[in-house]
Length: 251
Image (cartoon, rainbow, N blue to C red; front, side, top):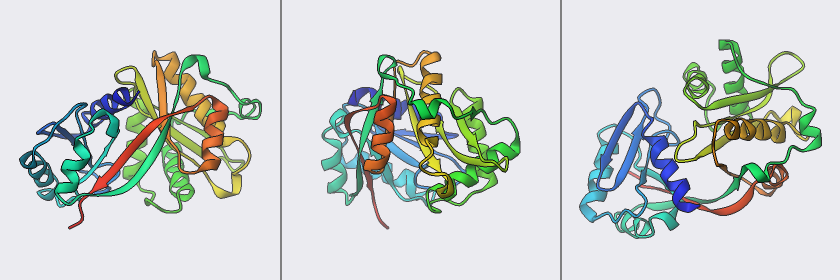
């Protein structure tokens, strides 16, 4: 599965507005943001970069005043990590990922009772973006650009789903990229603190996963941030399959 996840990472970065491919790496950039979580690179499966390849990759970030940063499944390109370390890159994090297949999908009883909505208006996208910002404790600021990115996900083969709050806003939501190489990445599952513990994360996760399977994906994968979230995803049918490595180069 590591090769599938890595092949997906390559295909997904190739959807970015600006693409640079050099020395076995694919770097995707979005001029609308400087976020390192959107502007990053990944190696091709089986890549064997030289020191010169890594220098050229670094330069692709430096000319844009961005931090050189990569995300990848190390088992799909095992010689990449040593090459990056030799150039001064350090590990930001190692995240386990979970995978769900059509035969494993389960809809938790409580989650099935929650109405999951598809955004349709500018206000929907703005409130979902604001909700995810709040859910992730301000790791990123809510913005019109963030709302526009959510709309692009929905309108270009991916999906955005949310549960409405009683006041008509958003209680929680998540996104899923358009499928590529038979799989899709579900990400950004977040619930506002006041609405946690009500099955919202499970509901949007199940709805998005089901949507991707209906569109022909053979699997959906995601990363989790803690044991509590892992248990939520496992109830929906996600199972551990591997790890992804995050590495960056400080100035």
